[in-house]
Each structure stands twice: as structure tokens, then as C-alpha cells.
Image (cartoon, rainbow, N blue to C red):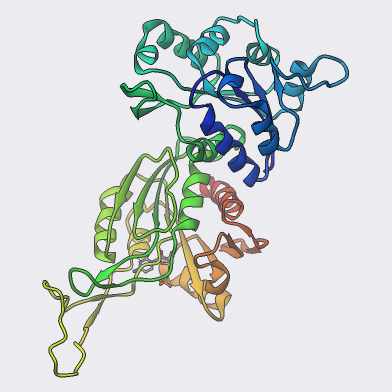
Length: 395
Ligand code: C5P
């Protein structure tokens, strides 16, 4: 869902990260309007944000005329959400106490839309009791606080106070406007490719990138679920805000990791591309050419079917499977849903889905089949989550 985001920038070196944030939010399809405090304009110029956002920037040093001189009111009326990143200790203190004496604090006071803040400050300023009191007040007032990260700080000290990276903020922001259809639900997701070792350095794997699994994890988290991941080989960044992320290699290891965790779950989504076979004669040492010209013989043994095993548990969670096929996609997917005894399967053609940012899936459940349009994996994931939320209470 495309939104209009008002991005407030207060004074701090982390303002440079907000340049990237504007770029990422626009890449997601959102409109971004930027408002800057006087101190912020000392770190990054309004012109930079004007170029990146493609819109006039409102700042205390560089007013964009809007006709009625009420830009601070108009901007918050147009916005679906107001994010202040970086948010300085000073700006947070003022907002927590209802002070409106500059552009950003006026915007915060006059807004009708939700407000989120990404604090950025020195570790001692963050720990300072007055600051902690202000943060508690902001949370009590319904303001979303994206907690600062740990690490090295621009001042040379180390500790909590770094603004989260732009990619993390862009990942977490859509949670603010997503319907909480999975609120309180625990979701376990497998994603990525398994890797079946042949020897200590080689193995059998596949082209799954993990993007669909990551998009589903994000969509479940945005819908209010507590999400854990069992993750094979992925070529994508994993989403922020996950409960637990376990890394595994082979299908058997994935099976063990899932079985240890799935009993507490309401929903199990099996997106991983799991190898059907493992190497039963894997070598403990790296295989060498022996000069005979004969290649080594690799013997295979069948892997456990993780999804079917979970679905067969007494009190099984609501199970969602994927059927990635290269031919007769719907026919195979229907059969797979019945064979694995799962309520919902997402069918897709490997040529459309594997390693791509977009996907076209058909959802198959007891009620029938729904072909979703070809769209980005985030949109596909949101549609799958909506269907899970519809089917879940009926179980
Ligand atoms: O049997 P097939 O691999 O075609 O089924 C695909 C679905 O089953 C996917 O949801 C996949 O994650 C899951 N699966 C599994 N364990 C296996 C094989 C597939 O969980 N060993």
C-alpha cells in the first residue's frame, strides 16, 4: 500500500542515514516529504533531501512557500505517517512534554497521523534518566519508538544510541499502517535453500533466494505476529524484528530445528526449497581426483518431508506450503496439498518465482483457488497473510 510519509530530521550526524532512507521509501513506492530542523540543516543541506524526495523541503532555514503560510499544518494533513529520524534527545524531550517551539515539534503537536521516532544520540544521553522518562512518556502516548542500536558512535564512545540503519527503518515502517490480523499469533517460517553436503566444502543446493520467505516473515510481523525463522541458504537480507532466527544447512537439520519449535506455534509456513535427497555417503574429507578418470559415486537417501511431518502432528499448527513447479503447476499443487494434508498451498511457476523480486501465485484451499496478480513478493506475501488470517479462526 503506497503512503505519504512525512520525514522529520532533527540535528545529529545520523541525518546522513536519512538520505538513504528517503531513497528506500521512494523505492517502496511511497511519497516522502521532508521537514528539517535548523540543526539538521547544519549536517545535510535541504537541497540534498529535495533532490532525493523530488519534493520541496520544509526547513527553518529554507521555507518552501505554500501560499497560506501554514505548511506545518498542511504537511501533517497530507501525511499518512510522521517519522522523525534521527530524533535528538532535545526533540524527544520537547514532544514528550508537549512543547512546540520549532518546526518539528509544531508538526508533532499539530499532526493527526501516527508518529514514529528513531532516537539517535550518545550512549550516556540515551541512558540519562530524564531521556528514559521521556521515552516512556512517548510510548505511553502511543508513539512508536524504533529502539536505537548498539555499537560505535560518531563521538568515539561505544554503546546504545545509534540510529537503526535506513534499511531496517524502511523495513519496519509499514508495520504502522498494517492491519493487525495476526495479532498475538506465533508463526514459524522455513526459508531459503537447503545444502546437502557431499564433502566438507561441496554440496547439493538449489536456486531459492529466500526472498519469498523473507517477505512473508515481514508481512506476518507487520500483521502483529511473533515470527521465528528457520533459515537455509539465502541471498537476501533477513527482516528486522524477528523473535528467533536459526541457521541450518541440510534438510535433516532443518527438520530438527522445526520440530523443536513448532509445537508452540499457531501457523507454520514452509517456504524453504528443501532437497528431496541427502548424500548418504558424504565424505568427511575433501574429495580428490584419484587419477583413475572415474568420478566419485554420490549415493542419495530420501530426506524427511518437514511440512508433511508438521501437518501430521496432533494439534498441528495451521500449515501453509508452497508448490514451485516447472510444469502442470496447479495440478501438482492440488495433489501436494492433499498428500501433505495442509489447508493452504501457494502454487507458482519456478520460471516466474525463483530468485526474482516478483511472483505470481495461485492460492489453493478448501474453498477454492485464487490467482493473485504478478506483483512484488511483499504484495504477494501480504495477500497470503490476509488469506491465512481469514482461514485461521475457522479451524
Ligand atoms: O514435495 P515438494 O518439495 O514439492 O513440496 C513443497 C513444499 O513442501 C514446500 O512448502 C516445502 O517447503 C515443503 N517441503 C518440506 N520438506 C521436504 C520437501 C518439501 O517441508 N523434504
